[in-house]
Image 1: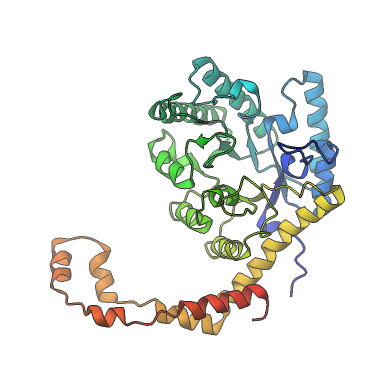
Image 2: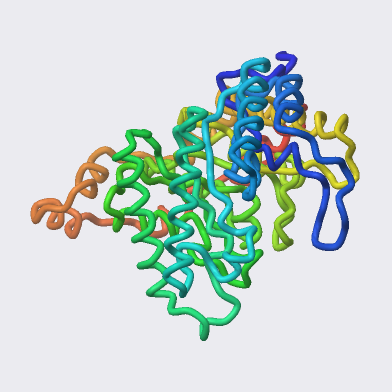
Length: 388
């Protein structure tokens, strides 16, 4: 059995804002001191991570001088080099500053919308400077508390216009970015536009450069809405739009908890890992999560190591599931093929429609087919629990 030392092939990444989180929450002050970008790189290097991601203002404070900015970037470059880390993804903070209190790209104020695009352009410049090739968009303030405040149709149009502009900017600058959109149903807004991954999958075909746009689904965000995250990722995979993924965990129906991956819903985590591994997802596996507020930085390292370790343990269990003879026999029994009918229903034609209408089906016989799902699920649980 593997010792589950982090394997670079999985491209495990963390954000400056994740391991650098100081433990502050809406009801309490920080419980950990702030550490520098160099110290964050050292922490991740010690834990065996592949890379580190950032929002523009995670790296460079919004009011930093040119001299301050250059000093921080120099420290960050050294930290990356010393620890063998890369920067696969960057993003923009369009939610923290008061100017974005009512949205960025979807604001009712044209000047704020323009400022949001400008800020993103500069953040894209910064990301490209460190080699990022994926650019994530999370619209944390793109929403409302009351629909009296904003026309939702106008909001979608404004968002589309901003993305089309920024796609063209990336192309003109030859950055080679792929854009990945991150959905969330609520928090910090009462209702956030593009609430689930499927909302973005519907938007993407309407964009000017749909080919360079995909999604960045997050476990916690879909679980907040009570959805099956595996199904959301499957839809993105099938559409060839899974450009990036945020791994964490979450109790269903709670606020955005951002727990360590696999720490709350292990069965869901297992099937997510199995899906990603079965379909050979090769993008970054980003842990957008935080250590418990009670943790010190030694425990934050355990959080980082644990996130990666859990993924690799579940990847090994998924392999075991795929190789289990009884499980595979049950799957063969459950998945009934009929080459003749599959050929007829694969593509419509008058001939195929006629053949299908002439086919006789025995409903009672079809209904009596065994579906031993209890046995299959129990075998799955025994794989997860490590006794099979």
